[in-house]
Length: 111
Image (tube, rainbow, N blue to C red; front, side):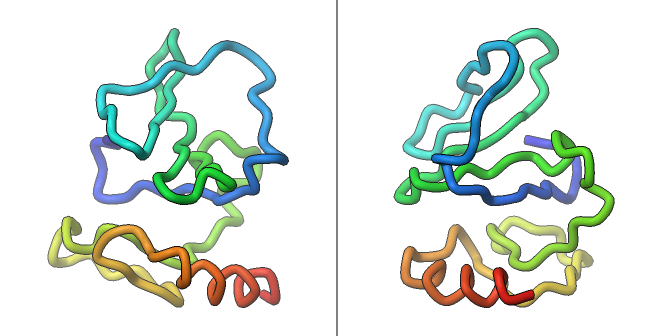
């Protein structure tokens, strides 16, 4: 979906997330996980993950401070290129289970 080997996002509580301009549209994938795009330029903006609607994954490039981001976990490693190795605390073949978030969120917040 990014035409790249990487897709960096930042997870925020959905209650603290607001679209301030425009009206994002759903992308071509229409499963339980919802990917939202800019209707004008078609840039991928954010994702509402299946089973975790209380969070929103915002594309890091939408943030002013994206250069300061450092990956904490990686998802969908079953689809990654063999040469890709990202230094992060957690790695999952798909999306993490809800129980994994209960462990990771406090650890991430303590950093």
